[in-house]
Length: 123
Image (cartoon, rainbow, N blue to C red):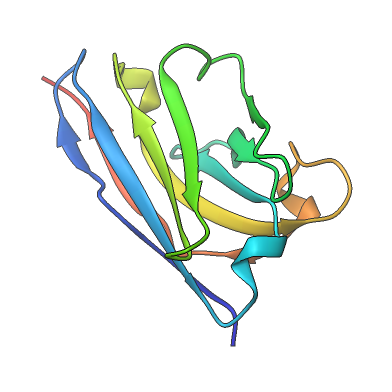
């Protein structure tokens, strides 16, 4: 059974930092692209970042460039998203995803999803 479990969300002040983690199990993590998406209340789920399984090349949404960093540790079957200079508009439920086919910036291209972790940026 493929499983992704996110952790690390919480309440942070504007300008602060947060590191999200994603633990994978039930599939060969090494051979799958991983990604992060987010969904704010009343909005569609949107792409944040992704990292290839073979060359570790990362891609980011414009809103995340320069502030967020995606990483993966194949030895531990984990992925992370380090977020800095957080803004209130970053408030959302953040989802870890794996196994992308098709356009990786679209949620429907991803096959495995975690349950999400809430990030709230507020003073």
